[in-house]
Length: 241
Image (cartoon, rainbow, N blue to C red; front, side, top):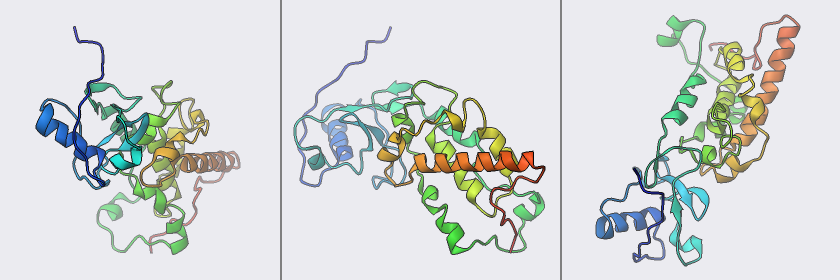
């Protein structure tokens, strides 16, 4: 039988610009070789080192020890995920929910999509409407901070829903009807109550809470178009240029 979760204290030196991740590597290399955590790029691009730092979901590689105002630093695994070991959590359900919401461009002409004869272009204004949502690095911090995710295991989560908006807003995409059916459910987009905690912890400024509210607008527009008997295209400019 496994022991109950507990804290272990370590003391390591730090410099003015030391990050929490660097401190963790000092612990692993000099004090406790068995401590488990994830890390890769060390430059806040891969999202691997997500964890709770002093109670807030953060990336360890971009959180400086000096920012935490001295004293002990408390590290914990992210909430709303099953713990594998120490600071490592099981991200498989997170990536499965992302994959279930069609995270890629959908074209009706699959032959053209696989072997395009031209470029799929958009205007600068169209790019501006969705570009911030392309910055997601799938770190899981938003899902860790989400109060709905803590109580509803079927909720896709802020990351998956914000990415769904990103593709619905993309003028090159033709999967609107299927996408709307995926999120217009009891455990879908309407389970978000706009707490905003997901956006507060996003390290890339994606603002998933905004994306979810805009996604709700797309869903309502699609319902109205279906009621009127018209084809569902929340974003009408779908042409291949």
